[in-house]
Amino acid sequence: MAAAAVAELTPASSSYTKTTLHSRFSYVSTRLACHRRVNLRPVPVSQNSRISCSVTSNEVQAPVALNIEDAKKKPECFGVFCLTYDLKAEEETKSWKKLINIAVSGAAGMISNHLLFKLASGSVFGPDQPIALKLLGSERSITALEGVAMELEDSLFPLLREVSIGIDPYDVFRDAEWALLIGAKPRGPGMERAALLDINGQIFADQGKALNAVASRNVKVIVVGNPCNTNALICLKNAPNIPAKNFHALTRLDENRAKCQLALKAGVFYDKVSNVTIWGNHSTTQVPDFLNAKIDGAPVKEVIKDMKWLEDEFTEKVQTRGGVLIKKWGRSSAASTAVSIVDAIRSLVNPTPDGDWFSTGVYTAGNPYGISDDIVFSMPCRSKGDGDYELVKDVVFDDYLWNRIKKTEAELLAEKKCVAHLTGEGIAVCDLPGDTMLPGEM
Image 1 (tube, rainbow, N blue to C red):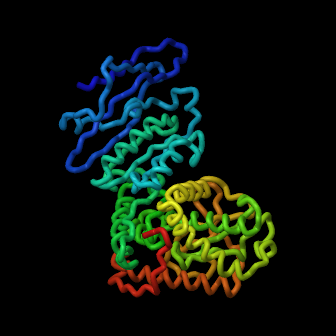
Image 2 (cartoon, one colour):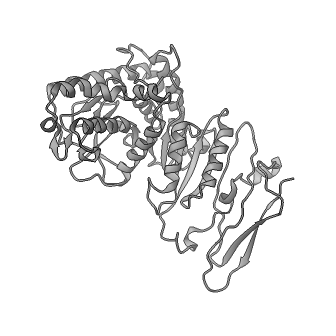
Image 3 (tube, rainbow, N blue to C red):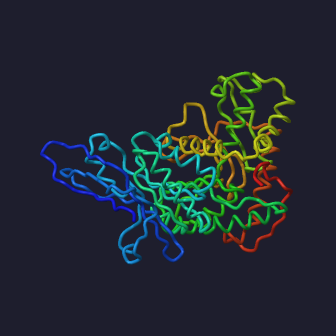
């Protein structure tokens, strides 16, 4: 029989005593009404108390059965998260910022497998920002999510103070201040793009409604599941109480790939490449902008004089990079996608370097470029580091760039008509200009 973990509260002396945790804790796991949660809630402890923990000599086993009636009264927890104490009572944590809630969908997937540990380590939001991870899965992945929670526990991240898992977005998204929407159905063999738009659109409509109902009113949402631009549009249309400006479609991996290709061609390291914009849709109509980009402060066209390469090969290389990667090792770009999510968040929580900008898919209402309103379109942005952003106005266009922008705009307008039934705009009419799914996303 599994041994029970015991926590003792003993009075401390008048001098400050550092809180310590010893040994390991069991975790409990119970399915209630086909819904399983792991709630990791802080237990308040006074500054004049000391926590010491012990287990009996037998090895603690997991999972441990929990009486149904007890489960209704006591939230489930994993290990040390069961006894989180007052951060303000500790010398090394009392200067930390207020804990923030980060919701992640598709949390048992490969992208999340790379991302969650970066979030928990403090490398994304900073070394003084404690976080709570709220992980959304499905009935099929709930057991895997328990494994994810166990790995997070074993990693001993000081900043990770709460972890909860579930399959109901109305539960998982509660009070979320960041929502990273990764989970989506992949495109199967023979599936039309229109069908994928409808299937995943239903997912993001439901998640938008959940965010609207229970998330923070200023939640920042990054949509990764494809087709991410139109999924982001569907999500924001179903969350009218959240500012449309707060929704992003991830195009940062495309920007990173563009920077890499320009650096390779110019023979420099990629930290010399700046001001790269991805315009439009995350599809093969995307427009990597070399006209406004710079290499070591100089316009790209002054450094790379091969216009044929810039106009033809450069764009194709960026678009097909994911497919080439899959052919090389048989897997999609989960790790670099996770890195690009980190980059996208950092760009919003840190001030943009002077003169530079970053790409993200955002709502086009009131944009200064003449791009159609009411779509989610990747554009150049700057941030003051407060989670908000502003569109960059000091960009130039030539006929080559503008014609390509209009092509990707037309595709997004067609996708919008295709999901009108999910955005409250009437009957869907699907007449997509072609199959523009990026390689590696099937």
